[in-house]
Length: 141
Image (cartoon, rainbow, N blue to C red; front, side, top):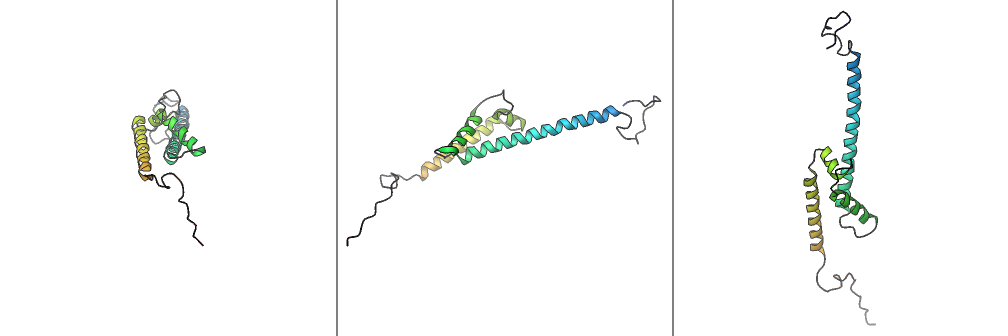
């Protein structure tokens, strides 16, 4: 604690920053720094959330924009990059998540969804299995 002009310790009833102008500056500087950190974490959470949603939503997409969204999300999730601030590993670490655990969970979800998709596909050699509609027979007049 700083001494006042007389060289005595200020009384406890006074404002914490009243006799120490640097303390208020230090406090507000530290406050300004914590706010961007929280904003950065919110941005990182939004990036992670968007990637996970694209990964799960477009997992079975076969073409077009949806397939591209899935491919980009999957590439980001699978890439093991420590250099980029917004890499999957660094985003997870910053948010207090274990990147390998999250990655493994997403890959397991992918395997389960693909397995379900294959279970629901028609089997056999009929028209439905070949993707054709059954032909309609014309009535004899």
